[in-house]
Image 1 (cartoon, rainbow, N blue to C red):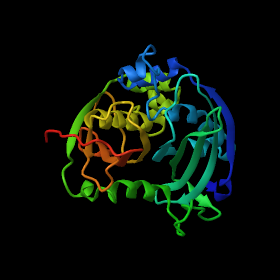
Image 2: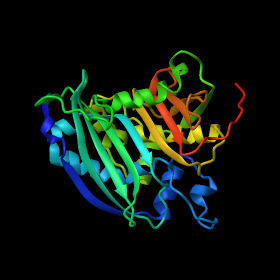
Image 3: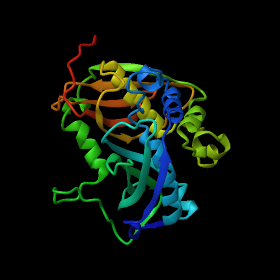
Image 4: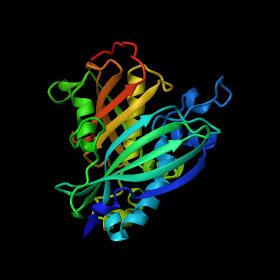
Length: 311
């Protein structure tokens, strides 16, 4: 099986989504986040969306783009590998967002073809609300036509998304790979979380909710969505760092490296002794100690206030 590098430049959309309080609250509730900033529609200023809510309105574009660029037998081999979200402002009830998706890179990797898609959403005022580079590995699929990497503007050399995600955490927090985390917290993962997340996020991929489909895909069982794992980690970072759910998050990056089974729990580890005072490096581990998410990085648009935590 092959993916042609000629799909670079292919687009899907635009799609327009009306964002209401019901959708925003449902997404937060699926993650166990019931803070007033997410739930109290009577509060001054109303409610705001969870930092990772962008995945909800991006998902339909992902399906559209896959359908237009690859056959089903290739598409089903895709797994979420890397994620880089830039938040220009939080999503709010009443937003009318226009989203487009564009393939920006196709590259060969040992496990298969690595495809990067960029999602961009703009508000009714024409200003960008969110930009996401979403990297997928298509296992066992070759690249036809040679690599076409995404080239980071101003760097001169190819900087694949996976490397940029890794470096975001490790260059500002070199201790991530060599020293214990500054803090660690455990987050329960309920047996039905994937089903709840699917309906509340409006993201449906049957490997997360249909055991027969998961087994046919040679998975051990249904597994939690990668975006749900990332969202749980982001919530844990905000809570543990005392930042508040309405903190001005502007950048979230990670690489996915393992499956999260249900029921169970995950451990979120954080490093706040970083060279960049605006951010926190983090990872997610499964009960057996394996990394389900690594090279995590969350940055604010302003310097975070220092907080002290017991080790």
